[in-house]
Image (cartoon, rainbow, N blue to C red):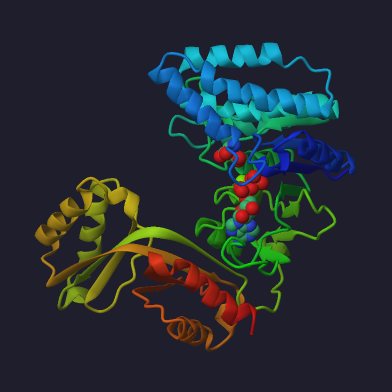
Length: 440
Ligand code: ADP
Ligand code: ASP
Ligand code: MG
């Protein structure tokens, strides 16, 4: 039988009713053998996610020595979930032990992981499935990356024994035996790892939208749903901020050529989005597949006559960043110009001034300029390479909307065009590109 691994996000599991809905989905197809769950998310827009409540518990346990006040909110959430579900699961001793462990370990990762742990325990009781703790099957190496050699065989073995299992998302065990979480939204990665380990036929990612949308629904109302998208396009869009799926969730399933399906827990009848490995993907006939973006970048613009004939100029510039442990996002260049696009968070506390001084010393540019508060917007699609005039349409649309473009980068794969604009124009820019390619 083809195995499906299904992952349910926090908004799908925010309260007892939603958890029941998720459980019904799981049980409606016998191929769904393994479920990976997130911590309860927001029930309404001003609500606080359980993971955020847990980070507050961590803070209190470090600063005050105990977290009983903050933990009482977690107790209330999980108690009411168990009550709403009418489960005969005595969660009180589990909650007591969790509070005690949070106060004893004083570990941010351990504390944050408890939302997934507790929710998975509840889901396992509800489904009548085994609970398999992620700490026993997902392992990280000393450098913080997934220990594939250790994790994959263990996951496969433990889950084959269990036949059906619920696994908490978001965490595993580090090289020293401590709980370690992925970055925020990381249950998507856990689901992908489990899918790869059991060689699933499909990795289903159940969330609160009916698929990957052509752009952020918080910016454009009811954007078009993307029916089919390639792994490459997904990687570009999720990296550039379309956080419906964690940007790193693609890697485990990509190695196993396992398709991903994004589905809506609240509208399971909707088709969702199918994300396909290159081998299985055929062009869909559209020019642009999707638009995504992120705010808060800084552009360092360097100009120097005969820069192109100065061997090692770019290397020297990049080695200054390397020395300061700073990642760069893009490096568009011209004959005598080079721009470095960097996430502004790296440059706080005098780091930017230090970099500029070092660049002046090492590179002796004729001119150096810094642009701050820059947003990047990526327009992505395999169809862009084949359609002459796509960039002309894009830039005409931006100009019509009165948006000043300060940086352009077109990936060599011609899969995307990224523009740098003022933070303040971000939403306007996404709307203008969406209008040009999806509403005309
Ligand atoms: P989950 O709790 O299921 O992990 P997330 O909040 O991580 O859910 O991701 C789903 C949310 O991602 C949606 O509610 C939507 O607001 C947001 N989002 C941003 N960009 C997109 C996009 N291009 N398509 C769909 N959703 C998007
Ligand atoms: N609960 C974690 C978070 O809020 C992980 C996840 O939801 O995927 O980031
Ligand atoms: Mg998520």
